[in-house]
Image (tube, rainbow, N blue to C red; front, side):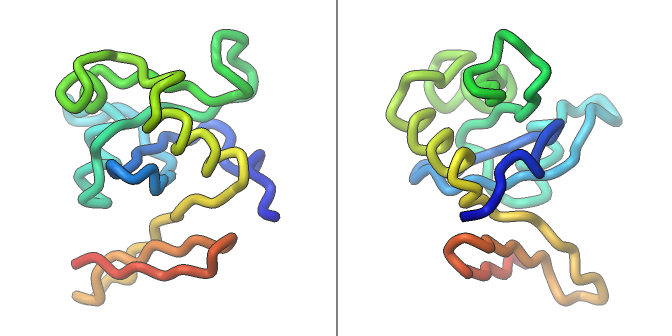
Length: 122
């Protein structure tokens, strides 16, 4: 089992099936960290953050994103919802995709070390 603590202080986005993508994104150029990660991955149904020092987060996982969650679900927080539970479970298991930019027209590679799954997005 992968140690999900390695993803502290990261942003996460998930697709509608609960597959989670993590990245170290911050607000920049007028875009939120969730929008930047969603634009990079091409995935952006819901999102949140991972930060173990935040007492208002559930087990270190934040489920809030105005940018993604409100348009997708109508709510800022997806905590306790089916999609939130699926994403949170994958984060806790460490079953997340980490993005690697291969450069040179090779596309974006996302690897999940728990499931040993590799996705290539162009």
